[in-house]
Image (cartoon, rainbow, N blue to C red):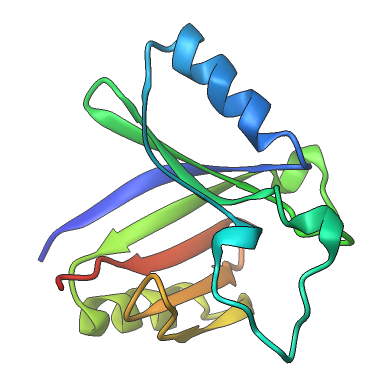
Amino acid sequence: MTVRLIPYLMMDGNAKEAIQFYETALEAQLLFSQTFGDMPENPEFPLPAEARDRVAHATLKVGDSELMFSDTFPGQSHSAGNQVTICITADSPEKAKKLYEALQQGGQVNMPLQETHFSPAYGIVTDKFGVVFQIYTESHR
């Protein structure tokens, strides 16, 4: 099974600016970008107007590596300590579940592992050392 670790930068409303900066500074190529406004509406969680243009997810190709970005949702706390997370990309929901369950031991679940519109199995945990991991399963559709 294939597993990749990808640095994930959490920005405080300036992800678009950071992406443009890294495109130039690191000679990176934008592979994907989606704003919160581009995502499907969820009636249970109405999207505030100030969140529509914030980056929900973006990926830059930097040489042979990738760098991922997201803005915080308005009202979420943001500090230098939680700005970088590690995104673990798995190639199957079974592998994602195994990683998710192992990393949450002694830690904290931030988002339960679940199917989303962008992944068959996605969740977020903070491990017992305070490191935040996003577990993402590639969709093979």
